[in-house]
Length: 131
Image 1 (cartoon, rainbow, N blue to C red):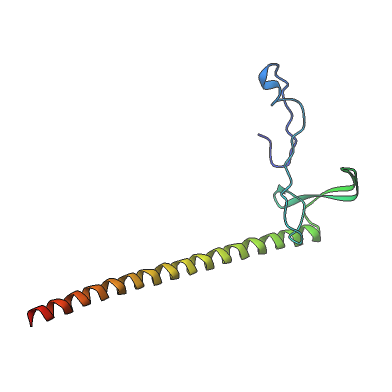
Image 2: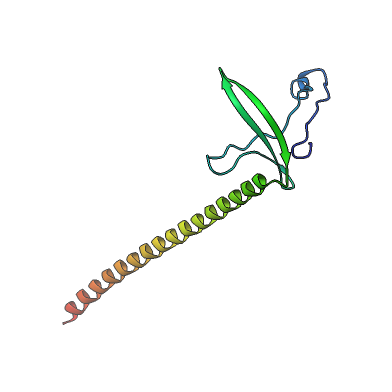
């Protein structure tokens, strides 16, 4: 298995494995992100690849510039946005778990109070029978 972002070259073994090991370069696939969360392909070690696409016509793209960068402001801003998004997702997940725990506790309390009321009415009925 190649390192992140490096091109994997096939061996070209004849037979059924030839399809999977053909000498077609395989590179890291881009992660599709919603608009405003940054773009590029993570290459590992804080490096990202960027492509400036200037024209799309009939399904064909014209790529004007491809860059691999680790020091630019764009990479730093993108990494910061990704970290912020991940931390927001963690906070939202924790809030959801807390809300679910509160709901479960409230349900348990209501079940306990319902069972206490049933026991209380049974005890009152027994008291009346004794009198």
